[in-house]
Image 1 (cartoon, rainbow over the protein chains, first blue to last red):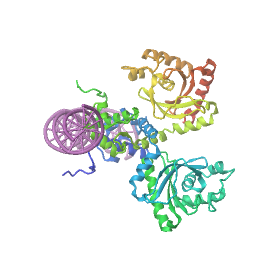
Image 2 (cartoon, rainbow over the protein chains, first blue to last red):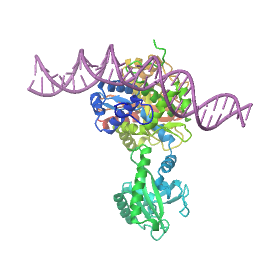
Image 3 (cartoon, protein in one colour):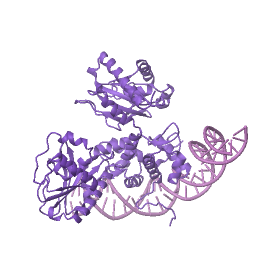
Length: 260
Length: 260
DNA sequence: ACCACGCGTTCAATATACTGAACGATATGG
DNA sequence: CCATATCGTTCAGTATATTGAACGCGTGGT
């Protein structure tokens, strides 16, 4: 039995690789560019180990050394990141993420992106039970009435709303549909405070949805998740619980897309 | 003498890290997702070595394994790439500068940095019209063939070329690609006299690019801009006009980075 | 000017991770 | 239906890389 700490569970140690990742993480997390010794201290590495690693990482383009000797992340990871972005579609990540999170298997989970003033449904995990509105992939709905749309709009600067709805607000779908731009602004303020968005019968009476945004590696909200319930299920307790879980799920998805 | 190939000159070997980088490079370069054994064969690694590496890289988020067992690049490098792009605020300055300079909106404008003997694309403003080569961020090309690469090489002392290409000049991409180090030197002399660099079909036949360097506050050339045209558009008049405008834009960018 | 400190770098000894062969499981073909 | 090939995985031995201490060197303090 070793007294060594930091032993990983799964398989081989490959410490050099793990150290390299830790170095890059540290450099890209801290806002000041560290020096070699400072980096060794921060990560608890022997100086010479850090030296060897940094030298190799410099050769490989993982790090660059500024004129004053401080270390920065290098250009090489751009290649991998670009490949990941090219290959990854939101949808498959969504499916995998939802499949692992068993919390929502009783509900219909949807994902949309914003296109102009409308949301487009790009993925949908059907509930394990009957009823429930069938969301079809590719379907479009006016963003101001949907939970995902409100979440996405709330993530945008307020001025963007004028460009989208300044001349012409979508026609209401139900008598609960938000009716004007000023009403929408009010809802978006509440949404930002709450952390997730709500749609209480605005696209169909009796249908209650919660929404939260998914961000990519730049922090931009690129998509939104929604959970669909019936209005009678939407007690304050349920809303709070499921809302929190949804925000968590959205954050998890963001992580898988490279977000911090 | 080692029987091992690929022995690096400089410092420590850190083979695990080098292998990991090779794996990621291979996966992001090939268009089909390889399996573990195939990857081991492609890189000449023992199966078990590849197994241990892949397992660790999976834990670290550098790789993800699809449902069928094939390997893809993971989301983790996005963080590093994002940090690189954020710190080199070249990119944001680039976007702003290009957005304000309406002169180039008909053309694709790219920006690269030099990494060894290759240029890495760190930003790209797509043209408003179809055609045009799609430059992907993170893409690499041999510096001697590209307009940006020539601009950056021309800004370096002549002796630097020997270190980069003294033993091994990149293989030509087209029949117009500059073929030797001495030919490159000749082109660089012309480039310095002209004030901007040209690529006439050296990375792709029919593609014509103009390049100019961007300097930071220390006066060092840190990046280069390029303008992409079709060869038929590249009349002497157009070249002179656009070349001058590009040099101006690059100088403007340099100013914004603190250059005198 | 002197000294002390911190940084980056080098080198030999040891504790380490990588290698090669073998295993069970699964998919393929006769 | 069985034989074969290929895949992913495990394990002990050896060749390997990492470690700790020491060296120059530049910098800032007294």
